[in-house]
Length: 416
Ligand code: ADP
Ligand code: ASP
Ligand code: MG
Image (cartoon, rainbow, N blue to C red):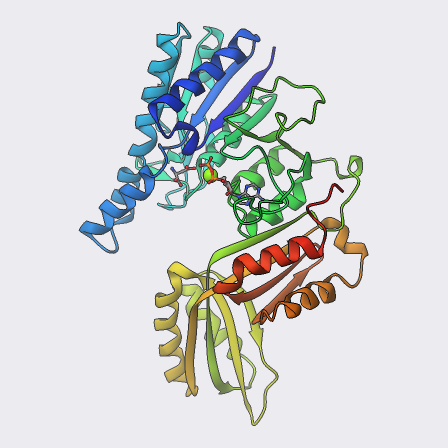
């Protein structure tokens, strides 16, 4: 008998029929003798619908009220799923984030979980109930509802698994695991039986939306056994089958894995870049440009400073596409103050990244990557590297071609 936290994403609870299927699946785990804590997302499309509603009232809605609105999506699914379970004779209780006291900080729209009260859940479990918790939401110390950022139900699930010391946290979604890249872009992408925590963290941070990055961070910090599975396959009760039903295990023991050179390709469509041209090339200039951007709460990703000429230099950096106009406004003010020549921007760019811990010990990966892109006449705008990843920024029209080209150049469709 195990204690399992199971999270079902939007598509998996997207219709009443699918909710009934999820209830059947949970029933099978109960029959297997397992205790189950369930986390659900809003029905697919619902969070987007709520965001549109908010923006139809106010382009920049107040953050507190935005969270009150967005959190309603998950409240619908916990109630429907609990009804479906109870109808089957499986005792279940739904709880909002506030009710199980998922305490967060007060950063509305991207709050961080601080603690979870497990007492009530333990007592429900002892009484043989399935607990159904609303993902993506919490409550701050003042009793305000908060949300955890898009994809945040993954983080709720991992945090609950950590708090309850669950045997496994299972993330059920609409694909049967983590692939070498998004299988919707490259149909030849290969499911990974296991991926190291470090690589999963890098994939998530570079745009692979299959797991929210905070969920991966949380899992790493508390060593939560984490598995990504399909909600449409036959249930997996453990064992070694590797027939796909076992999904992808995020493993923390890197030694046990034969390390692939490249484990996957991540991409991010939410990118924009800004360039300030002709700023004085003197000490402190980076700070006077990037300081005000940071002060306006815009996160900067890649940064390039050109080698100066004629006493001036250029800076280019990338930001989230949603922050593009705000960052451009701030940068234009800075440009005036510094006497810069011009500010230019482009919000039609994407970032494509190769990820692999095996890269550490191999030279020549970057040149192979650049050659493959050059052969498809894909122009690289920016490059950034770390020990286990290489990222390039390219025009968004090259996203699919770029990802497919790299996937085949590195032979990722073949069995490692
Ligand atoms: P959910 O609603 O269940 O949380 P998401 O849409 O957030 O589902 O995440 C699942 C999606 O992630 C898949 O449908 C797939 O298109 C996408 N995805 C991106 N990168 C990968 C990858 N490397 N492996 C698997 N899926 C990926
Ligand atoms: N419903 C939220 C979203 O769409 C949270 C989640 O699904 O994880 O982002
Ligand atoms: Mg998700």
